[in-house]
Amino acid sequence: MLDLREIYPLSDFQRNARQFIEQLQENQKPIVLTVNGKASVVLQDAASYQKLLDDLELAKSAATIRQSIAEVAAGQEQDAIEALEALRAKHDIPR
View (cartoon, rainbow, N blue to C red):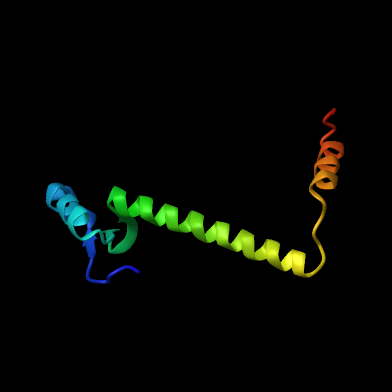
């Protein structure tokens, strides 16, 4: 979640980029930069951004697994060989 105390004008960032980057790397909290008083961009250090991407990928995988479990519970499962044959036929792929 964004900390509303971490909102700065772009001009401040341009004047003090090094300090902002050090701050981002130290506390690993994103900051919001504004242009003409409106939120414009969010800056985040690379390590916490990578963690965010990893967490998102994990959440997507978990959602896919939950959906698969629900489909099996609803009797919508399909034999793997039948599924592959259906894909071959659908995409006109020879054996």
